[in-house]
Length: 122
Image (cartoon, rainbow, N blue to C red):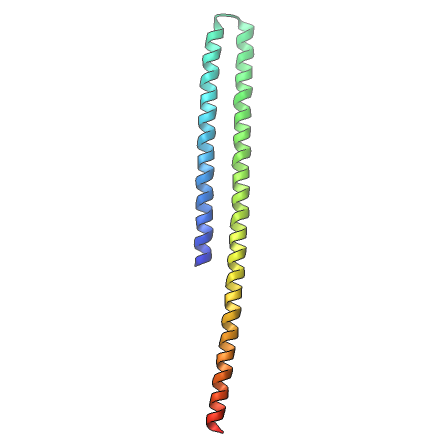
């Protein structure tokens, strides 16, 4: 039960981080697009060739932002997966250790009980 709660907590935290990264990326892309549009609008009066170049550069800039955002989100998920795996493994090791200790304790108690019964019957 503790293992599941730990894993759920890690996944929830990871999901919140990924959501935050996407939100920040969306804001950056939106800001870049808005600023690009403002720059292009100013240039419309100046030259068609320049406007075309500005739009192309703006598009490339937006694409670059989305690629970087995608890489950030992918990195977050990979790191989250690694953390969940580590928590799961450590929790499993702890459960296994506690189970072994409990087994040894039970064996010792049964052995002591058997010895006491044997002494009483002898």
